[in-house]
Length: 239
Ligand SMILES: C[S@@+](CC[C@H](N)C(=O)[O-])C[C@H]1O[C@@H](n2cnc3c(N)ncnc32)[C@H](O)[C@@H]1O
Image (tube, rainbow, N blue to C red; front, top):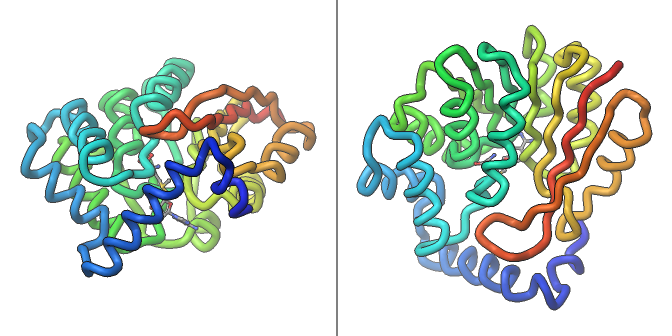
């Protein structure tokens, strides 16, 4: 990731806010963010109501502290893509964080859909599992604790949609591993978040656009809870 991108005038306010909040958390010894979000959700959201859980996380992100959720701007774009999938679709997500996108995906797919989410941080796994349970979606979402690179080769079956939303420098190598392990079927969708100018995922974008195995489309969006330009790349696997 190139730091200078975060220092552009358009991103400076956002970068400053995230840096300031991170420093304050470190200095005050605050609990890990996903656990604070879990407690906030338990206190303010309606149990068993996924929409209310998402709204409550949005409230935390705007009133308390920035959260790197897919958020209310890009969320509808992802929901719209799910209409292309079968009702019993299987989704692989890399990066669960607080469980926001797992909840959004599982709620939109309905009770026949299944989400497998891989998350490297133990606190995020704990927070995400609690939020998913609280939303009443625990039977549709499995959150595995581990790094994507080690976990991908252990997965079985194929996925109708892969949602890449972990560290941006791993998108390309992890997608190559997903292909090599036979986890895609013809027509599977690969959706990559944060491929706009702030993160500049050029290596990944070159790969899906030029390797000859994807039909790829870019949707302009904004970074969650901000007006900073971002984008989502939607690639249909055509081996
Ligand atoms: C942008 S957040 C995910 C947000 C989530 N998809 C949502 O929209 O609610 C990125 C997450 O990826 C996790 N992560 C980073 N590298 C990872 C890796 N190699 N394997 C699994 N998870 C990873 C981080 O710990 C973090 O929780």
